[in-house]
Length: 108
Image (tube, rainbow, N blue to C red; front, side, top):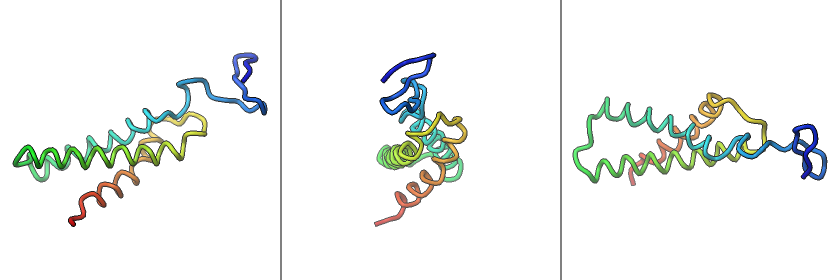
């Protein structure tokens, strides 16, 4: 890698985003976590608080799994692209989060 004029380039001359300047996994996790927070608020508003600690753990666990998997898929799509605005990451994470949330709530 070489640096010239403030730009970092790889061996082929392509521009490489600076460290921390791209679409990192952390940003994808935060984008998916926004939808987890919305889902948790809506769940409590509609169904009320969980009746036991075990039920609260199940709700939290299913949200955590859906959040991390949605973030992973989102990150795999945007990792090699120029930095996206956060709202675009959040919109991209939404369908993956919803599908995983629905699949996680299927009994059986």
